Every structure is written in structure tokens, then in C-alpha cells.
Image (cartoon, rainbow, N blue to C red; front, side, top):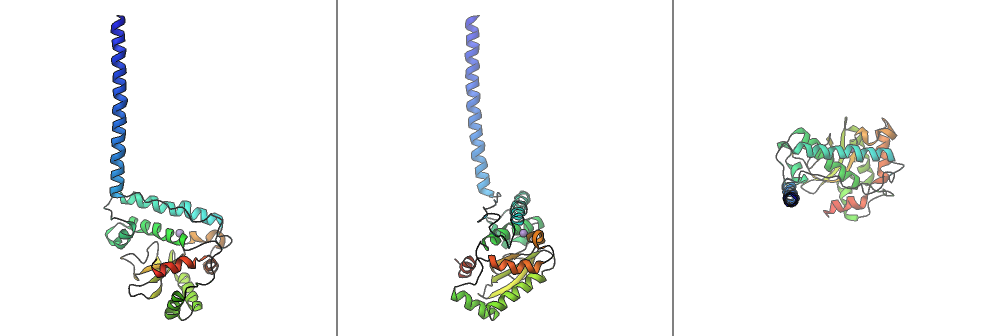
Length: 243
Ligand code: MN
């Protein structure tokens, strides 16, 4: 009796050990498989860290606007992009996806644009920035396209003001290397195959109400004027140079 009980316990332990082993193996196989799948379809776009604190752009853009804009709006574009891509075919990167937006659903177009545009917008600004660009090659290109820096600023502000509803104002470099001011509706951008004016973005301004309404309410023009104090011309110049 005693011996058969011991035997029973021994067998039970062995079975338990085997069970743990099997569980361990299957967990690891599942892990390996899921990382392969993730790599393959890379459908997990992520929110990059904001390059400064939420209050760093005060007083021109207030802390609460920055926090909501980044943690709610931008995060939602990332989440919705990942969700939308699960239903369809995926290109190899966000940039490729933008070049082929016509092939995708409106949800992919809106959220891929939203993710790209905001990442670009955060990097276009910095605390204690503003002023004027220093690079002479960039300044000459501005002069060649717009006459003077002042008239570039005036035309950019006009474009931002005229965007009806939600959208963006851009400075882009066209395929023939000209600087052009353009505007896109919603979350479209100049990298998209569906854009009216295509080019490589150099500078972007978000003119959706969520970008300014808490502080400026309906006064978009005031927000746009204040925003020049935040433009990171160093980064903008690097983009112009293709760095
Ligand atoms: Mn926005």
C-alpha cells in the first residue's frame, strides 16, 4: 500500500515536471513565433517619446494642449493605424505606406498620415527656438522662391489661415528642388500619392483646432504667429540639406 502510494506520488511528480517542461517549451515556441510574426508584418507602430516636456513650449503652446495632443490624439492615430492594418496588406515601412495610400482604406490613410505628421511636427519645434535660419544656402533658397524671409512667413501664415477646417500647412522641397508652400486637408501629407502637391516636407504646422483651441479658441492666426517662436530652424535646415 505504502509502496504503491509512493509510486503514485513519484509518477505524479514526474508528470508534473513533464507538464511544466511542456508548458515552458510551448511558451517559448509561442514567443518565438509571435516575434517572427511581428517582425514580418511590423504592424506595431509605436509612439516615439516627445523630445521635450509638455510644458516646454509654454507660453506659445500650453502644457495641457501638448499633453492631450500627444497622449490622446497622436496615440490614437498610432493605435488606429495598427488596428486598421490588421485587416489589410502592409508595405514595408510607414514611408512606403504613405507613397501607396491610394491602395489602402481611408482609416489607414488618415491614421498613417496622423502618425507621420505628428512625429514630424514635434521635431519641427523646440523650446527657446524661433528666430531666423542661419544657413546661407537655405536662406538663398527661401529668397529664390519667396523673395524674402518676411514674405515667406506671410505666405505660410496665409496658407495656414486659409486651410478650411482641419489640416496642415507645409514647406516642401519638390522633386525639382524648389521650395513650395502647400496645404493638405485632414491628415494627408505631401509624401502621399494622393497629395495634390507632392514633395519632401521641410516644415509642418498643425492647424487642427485640437492643436490650439484650449489657449487660442477661434484665434488660429494668433496661434500661427506665436508658433514661429518655436520653430527649430536647425532641424528644418537639416531637412532642407537632406540630412
Ligand atoms: Mn494634431
